Structures are given as structure tokens and as C-alpha cells.
Amino acid sequence: MRKPLLSFFLLPLLIAVLVSAAGALDRQPNADYHARREALAKKANGVVVLFAPLEAPDEVYGFRQENNFFYLSGLSEPGSALLVAAAAESKSDSPARPYTEILFLPPRNMTQEKWTGPKLGPENPEAPQITGFDHVEEMGKLPDEVSRLIAGGRPAIYTDVASHDETSASTQPLAFLKRTSLALNFLDAKPMLSSLRTFKDAGEIGLLRKAVDASVAAHFAAFKAVKPNVNEHEIAALMEYEWDKRGCERPSYAPIVGSGYFSTVLHYSEDTNVMKAGDVVVIDAAGEYSMYAADITRTLPINGHFTARQREIYDIVLGAQEAAMAAFQSGKSSLTRSGDNSLFQVAYDYINSHGKDLHGQPLGQYFIHGLGHYLGLNVHDPGDYTVPLGPGAVFTIEPGIYIPEEKIGVRIEDDYLVDQDGKLIKLSGALPSKAEDVEKAMTGK
Ligand code: GLY
Ligand code: MN
Ligand code: MN
Picture 1 (cartoon, helix red, strand yellow):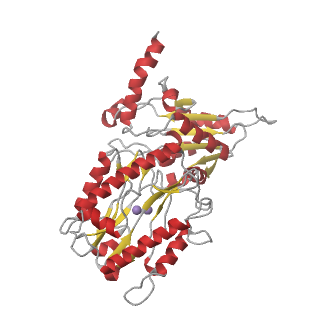
Picture 2 (picture 1 turned 90 degrees about the vertical axis):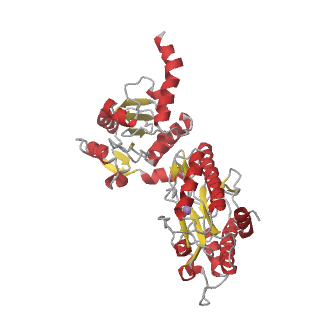
Picture 3 (picture 1 turned 90 degrees about the horizontal axis):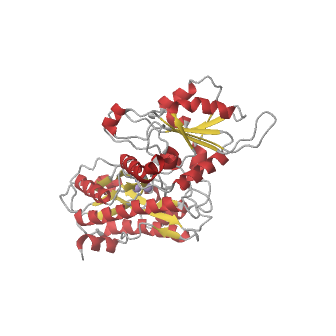
């Protein structure tokens, strides 16, 4: 009788505690993460081992799971590891092996938990059911499991070596694996993961939509709050409040609120100037919802009305974005800088053939960044840029013109999805972008 009691009454409670320990992130069904792990195992001709970062004993900045680890597990448990290996047919020197996946959890540390909250321990019999992993073991078993799988003739170990060799918090568990007496051949797992992460599943698209919707609401609030003599920082603070209120856990990146000359500085994020009438302000700011990032930019006239010159530049940037959208073809278009199907080239050509600078020169030289990037768990998501944009791709289109000499920077950035029919959907389309609509949303007239 004890087990049903645990399952029916205590398990939901435990899940609730663990979910709240994870910061109440929305989580896709366990089957979605399982499917990703199986897809990764199929791609890898070897064993894949990934490590979650460690949590600092006094984690004052808040723990955030490593993106690839989260993609494969949906888990925010620090200091854990996961192993996957594809099924193998029998060979002369090794028996057949089924698909294998194991989650390794560190032992619970009750002193630490007083600081950072309850964790899922490897001794918990419900751990496979909670996490969706076929097997859950304690961290110390990892070398044994690796050697067991290697004995089956799969010597390559894919891991995220490069990122952990930098200053990642996961260095310690990786070093632990490297210290083992096994002769291991380490390869980088990241290219395979980037390829898998290029096209989003329905659950990911749902989370991205929530990030975008919360961020659009924050931009609407900024439209009303931008005025002469208001500090840029006040706008950033207001926007963070607005998207957090809608369930985001943090900004997707340091919010950029750059007015006057600073509208021309691409990743300005000090946000400390007082905004002046007659200037424009570039607001590139968005929230992260359950680990998934939005990325939206609007450029506003601080007193509610663009000057003729600001409006001219603004309309060219908007025209470039619209030209790229019109040129989009599912299964053909790409975000690369060159090539027959480059959307960047479309936007660049538009900018370079409209308007002039103060010296009579074309404006292409002032479009100094790429046209866009994938969105996902990273704001600059590491997808495969060599394949065309197709169903499931989520990305930005963000042309800009930055003329420091005129203190005019304009960027317009929206988030897009290619749906299952190959149609381009502007996820952030509820936020006005035509100059007159922006002025109306700011002033009410
Ligand atoms: N907010 C960073 C970017 O637009 O890429
Ligand atoms: Mn962007
Ligand atoms: Mn941006």
C-alpha cells in the first residue's frame, strides 16, 4: 500500500517542490526531451556526455541551466550530467546494445540546500518518472557507465569540451571525467546540437511566442513612457517589470536603450543618459520566457514626432525589412551575407539604393551588422546557417542604419517563424512599426 500512496499523493507534491525550485519554468512534456536525446544519439557515432554547470555555494546571481543541457532534459538541476548512446547491432567483439540514456545526479547536500533550495537526489525512486530519463544514477557511477559503453567498441566521447575548457562552471566535472584511467577520444558535441536546434518543435514555438508576447507588451509600455528628460534607465527598468510580470524570468540580453549619439552604438547597454527632445532612441530589449529568448527593437522619436531627416532614414530601414520579408521563400532563403538567396543582400541593396548621407554617399556603409539570427534558448541561437530557412525556423530580421555624424541610429527588429506550410509569420507583428503608427502609439494622435 505504501507505493501507491507515494505515487498518488507525494509524487505531485515532490514535483511541485522541484518545479518551484527550478524557478517555475514552463516545461515541455518529458517525451519531447526524450525524442531530442534519441535524435542526438542517432547522429553521434559514439557516446555523448554533457554536464550541467555547478551551482556556486552562495549562488547570489541565480543559477541558469546550460542551454544544450536544458534542450536535452528540460531540467534545471545543477551539477548533473547526461549520457546517451545509440542502439548498436551485435559485432564479433561486442553484443547488441539498446539505445541507452542515463541522467547522473549529484548526491543531495542538505547544508547547501538551506541556501539554494531542495534538489532531486539520485536515490529518489521516482526520479526516472519525474525527469523522463530511462535511467537515473548517482554522479559517481559515470566513469563505470562510460567504460561499460566503450567496451562495446564506441571509443568517441562527444561532449561540449570547447565551452567547458573556457571558464564554464562545468570545468570541474569534465576534469573529473578526463582524470579517469580510460583512454578517451573527446569530440565536440556542439555542432550536432546546433544542427538539431535549428528547427524548433511545437513546444519550443509555444515558449518563444510567450517570450515575444511579453516583450511586445513591454515595448508598448515604453512607447508611452519615452519622453524628453526621462532617463534611459527608467525605460529599461519599466520594460523588465512588464515582461517579468508576464512570466519571464530575466532579460534575454542586456537591454539597450540608446538615445541621441548612443542610438548609433549597436550594443550600448549602460542606459544612463537623459533623453532629449529632437533625438531618437533605439530600444533593443526583450525578455526570456522559460529559457527561450525574444529579441525586439523599435526606434522612437523622443518627443513623439520624427524630424523629416529621421523619418527619411526610418522609412528606408523599414523598407529594407519589408523587402526582405517580401523576398522570403521557404526552403530557399538564408540569413547568410551572400549568395543568390541571401535576405541580407536584399536588405543591403534596398538601403544602398535609397537615400544618401550628408556627403552624397549611399547608405549601405551604415548598415554595419548582419540581417538576423536564429532565436531559441540563446538570443543568438547556434543553428545551422548553411541550410535554408524552412518550417520550424525562428529568427530575427533586423536591418539598421547608424550615422554617428547625424546622431541618428535606426534599427527595426522583429521575430519570425516559418510555419509548417512554409509561410513567414511575424511573431512580433502586434507591435507597430510604421512611423506614423509608432507616433500615434506614443502620443495617442
Ligand atoms: N539584441 C541583440 C541583437 O539584436 O542581436
Ligand atoms: Mn537580434
Ligand atoms: Mn536585438
